[in-house]
Length: 81
Image (tube, rainbow, N blue to C red; front, top):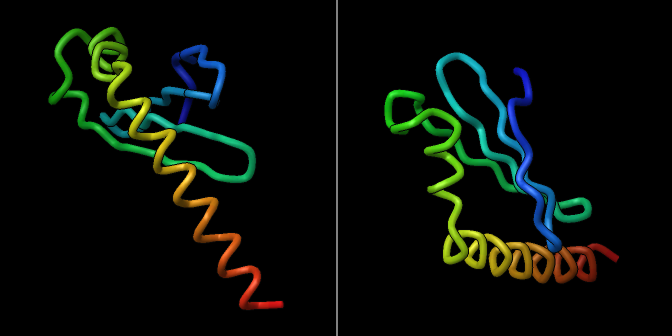
């Protein structure tokens, strides 16, 4: 797996990887991460097509998911204690 691009964003780290004819888009926020796999054949324009897919609406949804992931983890950790 090799990194082919990074997309600057103030609220999370966004990295795009290439592996086995797939793009892997990884979002990181602290200890949490989300990743999405796309077949290279499903993306028109190569990595530029991936950038187009990552619009503001999609990224805002990702950030909401991070909030929910963090909430679930905190609740689980409290039950564990």
